[in-house]
Amino acid sequence: MKIFEVTDIAQDPRDSDLGFDLVDDTSVWMRNDPQFYRKEMFPVMTNIADMHRSGKEIDRHKCLGDLVEKGINRYCLEYDLGASPDDVFTQEDRNTLVDKIFGECMDDVKNGDYK
Image (cartoon, rainbow, N blue to C red; front, side):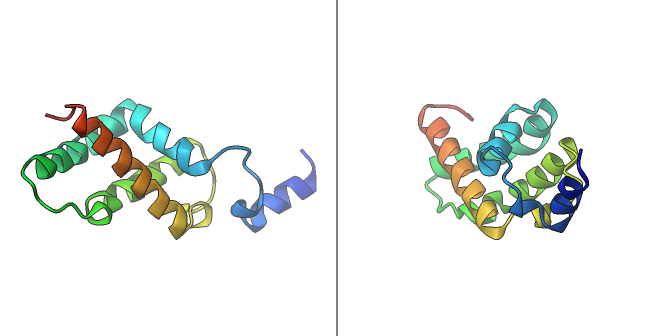
């Protein structure tokens, strides 16, 4: 490793090109990490499915905001990004992640999952 590689990363992790879509990777990790999915994601998805079946209005950011925050915190720890989640994920990333997870969840609910 060269010294400029260390200093470039230390300045701002968002400035370096990660080589992958951070939001997509986080979404896949949240669905595929067994502990996170079982303890955090499944209960939220089930709650959203129940709300949908009962005809209640679903505020995606209210339902998924805490889940996304927990997910990005755990993602940063899991992959030892060494930075605060606020240094890695922008508010736009968080909103995109909420929208992505909500869309995937609603597809699953319409297919009969999360009963």
